[in-house]
Image (cartoon, rainbow, N blue to C red; front, side, top):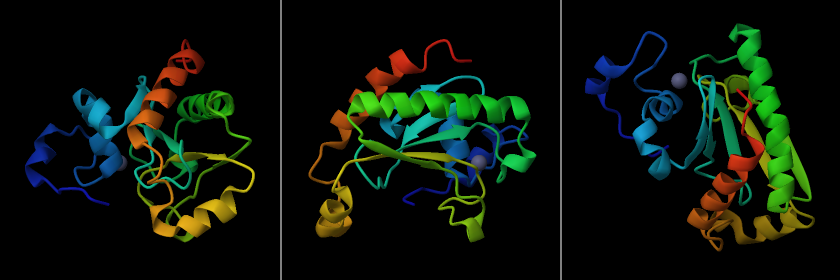
Length: 165
Ligand SMILES: [Zn+2]
């Protein structure tokens, strides 16, 4: 992760925020949502484009609370997360996805990229994309304009995520 560790920021974090956690950082900096590619937030969760997308349109739904397992998350927040996840699938289908990978890797052994802060992946899939993206290798999505995708998803979210909280 390209992320500047800023110890002086610790003062601005409440009890449940971790100063060196990228997701807490995103959660706490609403004024930077546009540049951080956060396209939706309410009082329980926020949604952000994956910085290293598996496919174009790959985004994350993340609780504001810093916790590493569903087991330690309040049921109300968990249910809200999943409700948004369901709407997120509809969003991606409208985006053009022919399929979706939906899930959470829990903790380091579970394969989580950022194991300390729970996040739900929604990855749009397209017939033949495995071959296509493998061919392009590390530059998988660089042929597609990331900003264009961000704004498209953000526009769709206004429709799909309204009156959810
Ligand atoms: Zn965190």
